[in-house]
Image (cartoon, rainbow, N blue to C red; front, side):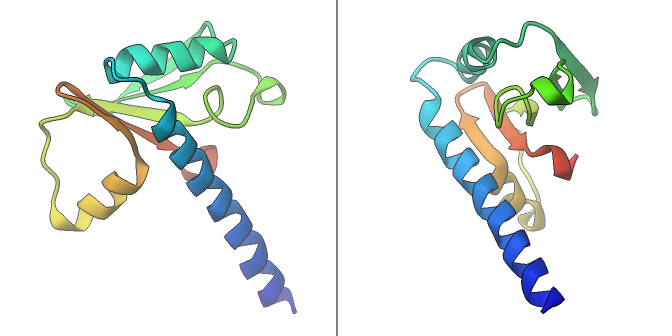
Length: 117
């Protein structure tokens, strides 16, 4: 019974994440990924950001808000920004594709839920 409950709850969380990613992909306009990301984050009343330089190619940002004030996506998720020309190992390609919400000529943006940080 406990195993069934765990599997059920995990599937609910996973499907919610997939739904958020799909909606985010659709929200990007034809303009640049960075301009659209900025607009979506500002529209969620986020005016300050945390950032972390992961390496020479990747920066991670997240809205600076108290957890109680966060919404479901734009002011809650972590966003990894990297150049679009980066190539990934076969083993990484599936994960990168799963989290990519925008890819243009210059930038790739990936979204990660807070529980995957």
